[in-house]
Amino acid sequence: MTTVKYLMDGGNLEDIKYCNEFFPLAGVTTNPTLVAKEKAEYWPLMHSIREIIGPDKMLHIQTVQTTTEKIIEEAELLRDKIGGNLYIKVPISEEGLKATMQLKKRGFGVTVTAIFTPAQALLAAMAGADFVAPYANRLDNIVVDGTKVVEDIMQQFKLYNLNCQVLAASFKNVEQVHKCALCGCSAVTISANLFKHIISHPMTDAAIAGFETDWKDLYGDKTILDF
Ligand code: G3P
Image (tube, rainbow, N blue to C red; front, side):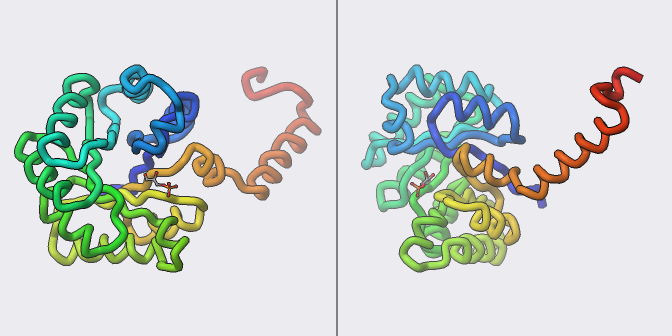
């Protein structure tokens, strides 16, 4: 089994640059809400994201169409204009599933998104989706255990030997991300802010401060490079 992949969820270029520089980032995911938040011209924004992460990292871009024909048209335009390691995000629906099957025939990577139940995830996987994106925190908000749903989806795919990865999304805290990693989730997509929370810990800060003080007590401002 490969390790969990970390993607950044968002469209802010500074955040993407930051995450791409400091974390082992597997890619970026966007959706219409996150794109609209940037109040930017669409194509320059998408081009810039691709430029920052390069052609090899995954870029999951969501369609804004609702019919199969138009979803395919939009996917083809995205492939022409953005290209690279691209996944077309399609919200789960009847048209979405039909589009998934057609997109796979045309060689597209597909992520079926806005997943809230294992049953939806199963249908998406059977339609050929490469990834399904369950919304962990939005489930928690309606008192359904979001990370348990992620775990159930993983178990289901294992049970039926389905070659579909789970890209868990909609996180608000480190615990949710941790639980997904514990259940062997294939990938998580998280905000830049949550990346910062994952690595920071007051005990780590205290440990680092201790190293600095103890070193300086003996060697002053000298470093290993000075010896
Ligand atoms: O990738 C889906 C995600 O952006 C939804 O997150 O925070 O709007 O629930 P949120």
